[in-house]
Length: 232
Image 1 (tube, rainbow, N blue to C red):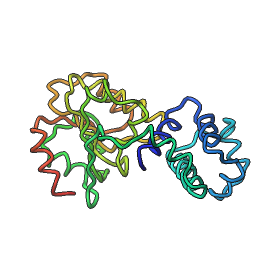
Image 2: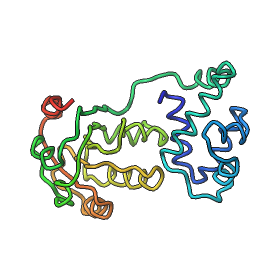
Image 3: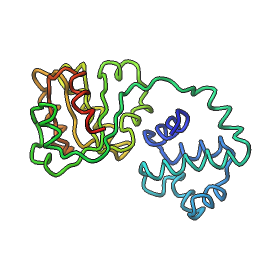
Image 4: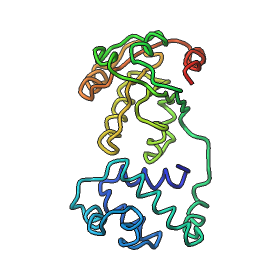
């Protein structure tokens, strides 16, 4: 997804009224319910039910297909709306350092590789696979990154490790992940708090309630990246 598509998808997924947001963007692009339904190979009533809030909020897959349809249908008309909107969404440096692995890495092997201590849900590590990692500056995210861009931290798949740096207690990163879980149906395989000396009990409780293994490590971040580079 490009910046425009991520912005639209993020707004829909994080909206308190995702159906209303879908309707707004469909109308901005001048696409009828019938055209959208035909492109997605579903009934017009399904589109109507989503937009009217009569159907369960769309998951990330539905939102992704919907946004893709907006762009592709606009292409058939010369991409007039897309070009107009992209003026406000020029590509910019991602706030997240996202990396993908060639293949899945077992959770226990991942924790051992980065020299991490497991402080929540250790029993789940052996059953999960990690397909990438994202390094996230906790302070920068809180101060500079709009909520609709949080989805980009998941890269190609949420089955990844979110590595938070500049962490004081660990509470804020876990709250951010929990809020995102409600809005997008996405959660990471593992959360790593970098350089944390003592974890906030609330952070541990959130990790346990969400069933996400929580790790801490103080390995230098560049050394950590070099270590994980072998999986990419």
